[in-house]
Image 1 (cartoon, rainbow, N blue to C red):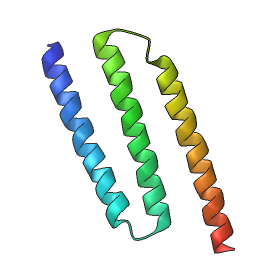
Image 2 (image 1 turned 180 degrees about the vertical axis):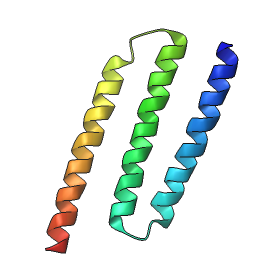
Image 3 (image 1 turned 90 degrees about the vertical axis):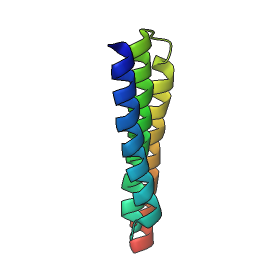
Image 4 (image 1 turned 120 degrees about the vertical axis):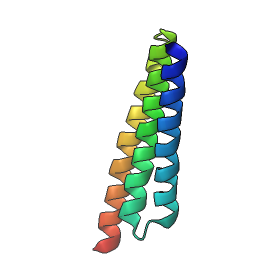
Length: 87
């Protein structure tokens, strides 16, 4: 059961990451690319969290916290940059 769950999670997260990368590459505007980059970071968070859940260890919790903070700070910084560019 664990192997099937791992394979399904890997396939779903990989397809979602490929779609986010395609949006980063093809995105017509800066906002599309920023949202896709934030989505890619959320996918990474999901992958690390799923790995921790499947292997039943909590040592990756600091990694999850750091990635979450990186996503938040990065999103805020890019939005501030986009607002200044439009004005």
